[in-house]
Image 1 (cartoon, rainbow, N blue to C red):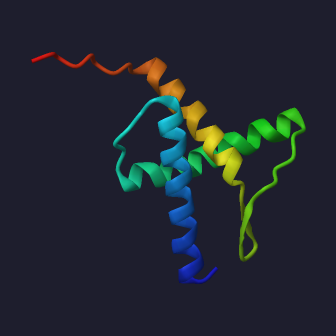
Image 2: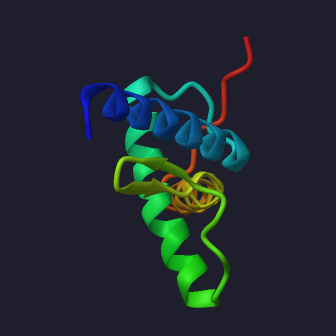
Length: 95
């Protein structure tokens, strides 16, 4: 994989992580957090899809690597929802 392919993969992972976080109710994550969340979501999403016998397509192909975009977003949303259960956000104080 060349440098352009790697950077594009990071960009797609950040979009998938950001969308997954928004679905689960988290907003304002940084770029690095979104990238990590996108890759974790891809792992969780593909695991769930394989266990349920669902197709992994559509995916983006980067050289010899496939990135399942839809499953990455869903996996990221599931992961963020699980994190929200473990560490709920504090309510905002009214001024």
